[in-house]
Length: 95
Image 1 (cartoon, one colour):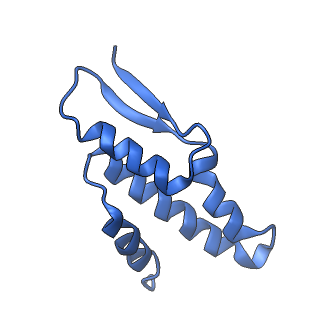
Image 2 (image 1 turned 180 degrees about the horizontal axis):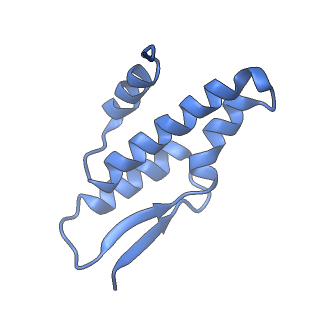
């Protein structure tokens, strides 16, 4: 089996990330463990957007933040400090 996909199953976004990380920290397995998060990935972005064009950038940053944290969880390298680090990185001016 090449891979297993962990579903968020209605978990809160940070909770799903923590659980994905815990599974990946268990050690090597003969398959790749990834994620298929719908609501747990999109909810923070939708909350930031609020249906207002002026909040599109905020929504993009929220999605990027969750994606970065979930990437770390896929590597088994996520911890709560990643939440603060990702926010700091997401708020840096581009250029």
